[in-house]
Length: 290
Ligand SMILES: Nc1ncnc2c1ncn2[C@@H]1O[C@H](COP(=O)(O)OP(=O)(O)OP(=O)(O)O)[C@@H](O)[C@H]1O
Image (cartoon, rainbow, N blue to C red; front, side, top):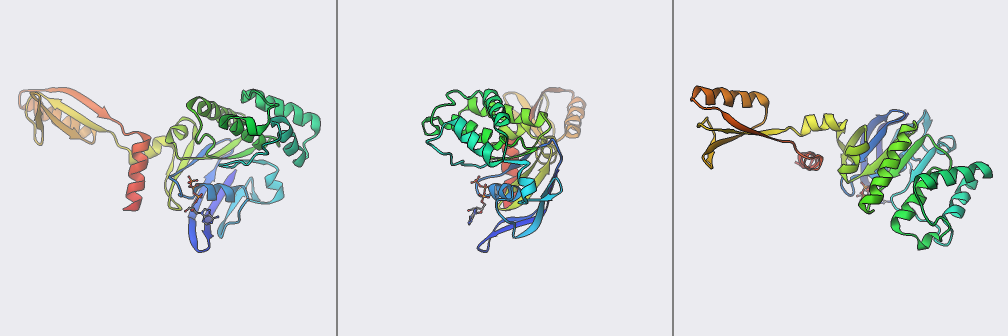
């Protein structure tokens, strides 16, 4: 559905995105993850056709990013959405529906349904008087006024309270279950883990890891095992009357078990430690820096 090839963006000679290549399937939830300044927003804006790449291509459903034909089928949620503070949510969304030539009756139904699903209260209140979470919901509804197949969400839940965050993440999941393709950026890996099918990790403009969460875990986040024995085995440390050794795989655990038995003892406990996605992410970024 989305194809990105060798995408590059320079701002006055500063390379913000470099050599970026990935594909996103229809109906997929695809994450772009990375620390501040990694190039996430720049990538998303190129996908949405809002800025031109310096080199490379991005196509959405076979149409070059930025073409009018593609924009009609795309909803973009900017990281910070400037909303018209004096307008009510309803009038603001109607205004955007008009820009997309959505017939009035269709727009009214669509806007009401979306705001119901987002559980937005006080929809006739001026946007300027709304909370941050409510404003974010209005901005999300705006990205949906043209009923697009492709959604590009830049940090959809950034800076929101946990309840609103969960709400928005759940809603994003539902959008994909309806068959829409969702690309979103985040620096909070918890969100990514809970809804992304696949992701790329970016740092300083480059993709430094890619794949499914499980794949990334497998490649970069190996579990470690702490094995406790009641007899000394090679390289073990004595601790509280037991012997402790940390190893990286199950074969090594088995080797310790055999050594313990040969020494007339046994393995008395094994603790498995699985790194969090946050740990893995820090590791990958550290490796890339090195
Ligand atoms: N219009 C611009 N002119 C010059 N440099 C820019 C411009 N926009 C972004 N940059 C720079 O490009 C790099 C990537 O920025 P970008 O906003 O894409 O990162 P990001 O991963 O979205 O970061 P954040 O999480 O902070 O939003 C940063 O170093 C940023 O300062």
